[in-house]
Length: 296
Image 1 (tube, rainbow, N blue to C red):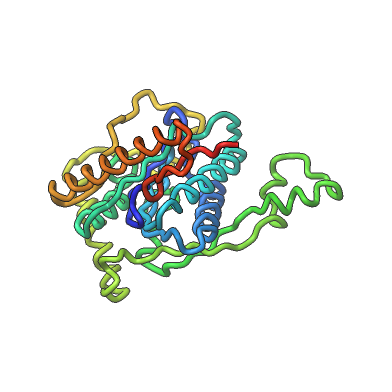
Image 2 (tube, rainbow, N blue to C red):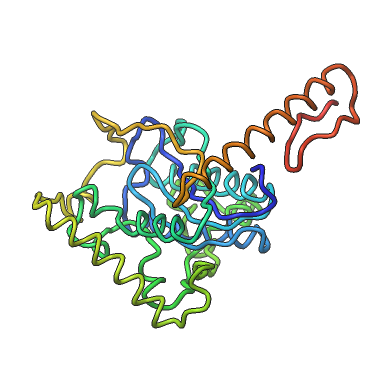
């Protein structure tokens, strides 16, 4: 990240678009626990505003300070790949590529990204209503209590007892004795902080109603939540929608031009510092939050 702090729309996709995050009660619980633990581990440097987990990717809307988002995502994705991978019997690479994190530059764009998150499942023709999506989503927390308890399965504790107990078999990894309650909080959008709880909930309902009305107008059949849950998680879709990720999200072209110029300035400064480093000048000044490999 090349900003001191900011709001980001984050996307991460499963390997080959496979349905490795296909919703189930077990997957949702594990995903919720890992997400809550990742936020907890960030110690206030990452704040979660919205999220949705599709069958083969997920979206987050977060505020992050400096380079904290990189550490947060490393923790989140590595734990999801290990734990969900065990649940769905997948041992290969879990993620397709690096995640994308696009700055969200103004309030209008921020609400637009929230709307995009809430539209998942409905826009794709998978369910008729946002609340029917069987995967993990922030909608219940936006319309009800902002905090929700999940289980974090502490495998470190499990392995510390490996000498005294029989730990063979994958089901043991998700036994109740390794489960620890962890709380996941969804923070209000910064632009809605001045609103009361009921006002924020009305605003969320209005966004959901818009999404569902547009879907009804298209008058197309939906797959349905039961069929979504029945899909095999190893399934590789025949066709994947691929598009270049935008540099950022804004309601004006001017804001995007300024972001692009800021990014170009950052890249130029980083390349210049890297060239000095490679010539042996280890005191070269890198731009804020720029990184270089350590020399051993």
